[in-house]
Structures are given as structure tokens and as C-alpha cells.
Image 1 (cartoon, rainbow, N blue to C red):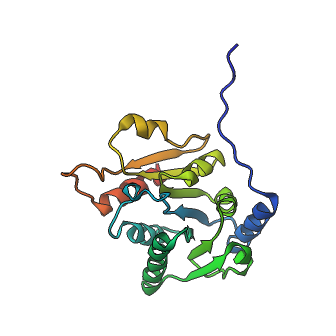
Image 2 (image 1 turned 60 degrees about the vertical axis):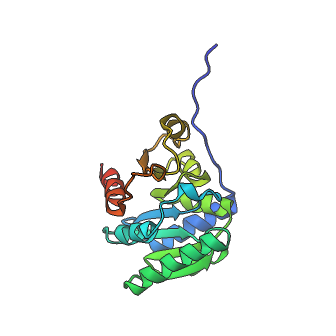
Length: 206
């Protein structure tokens, strides 16, 4: 007979989830903050990235929104970690309060921090996503984790022009899961960071 459809599910390790929940209580005691986790990893496939200043412009744009706190995964590997470090420095230079911690130290978060860079494993970032209101990132494992955890998910999807591929890898879950498509393949494509970020912000408000 027919089987009932089931969405994917993820269960972070209980100790990681408890640490993440305590972190959330510390930075958002009144429950009025929108907590967004970002991950700019692409699993080594640089075609999935939007180049230039897109990532830092996105972070700056998000921090301009009211009652926003951001978690930024510090990433894996020299190249990715270098990019994230540059983002943190730029945002700090523009006046935002930033902090960098290992996951095991997130209890030391300053309540004034707008942007927290976290060095963490995949299991630890899954716990942080679970206590977040939204997830934003590229086409990677984290978008699927976020959707499976019933967290609003916004995926900047680049690196392909194959519509069927995009649909197949669309994150699946019971909560909002939106794709912001960016054509980084076609020679005549014009990458407009303002347009990409604008589309993402519009989807967040819809």
C-alpha cells in the first residue's frame, strides 16, 4: 500500500542542543530577537559561491534589520576561514559588535554582540541552527539540516542552470524553504549583489 510521506528529521546531540538553548536564553531573554545562523560553506565547490563582496554585503544588510542577531559559522579549511575572518573584520570596522568563540565557549557570549563567529563541528552547528529562527546559506548540507529542523531556510543557489537539479536539491521541511537563484554560469549573466540581497530580504518579509 501507499506509505505516508515523511519529511526529513535531525536530532542534534542532547548536550550540544542544551548548550545552544542556554546560549539563546542568554542573548534573547525577552524572546524578541530574530536569531539567524549563516553558513557560507560550499563543500569545496566554488561554483556554488557568489563571489566578490556578496557575503559581507549580505551580513551588513541583515544587521541593519531590527532586532537581529547573527551566528556565522567560521567554516572549514584555510580559504573559507580566511573569507569569514575578513567578513568579521569588515563588519566590526563598520561599528557592529562582533565576537568569536568555540562552540564549547558560547556561554561566554556578550549580550551586546551583534555577530558571533563560531568554530564548530557539523553536529554543533546543527544545534545552533535548531535554536535559530532562520538559516541562510548556499546549497550545502546545512540548508537540508535547517529544513529538517523546521527552521525557516533561505538558500542562495548558484553554480548550475539546470532547473531540475535545483528542484531536486531544494531543502525539504514543514517550514518556509526558499531558493534565491543566482546564475553564476552564463557568460552574459550580471551578478548584482543588491538585487540578490533584495530578493532575499523580500522573501524574509513575505
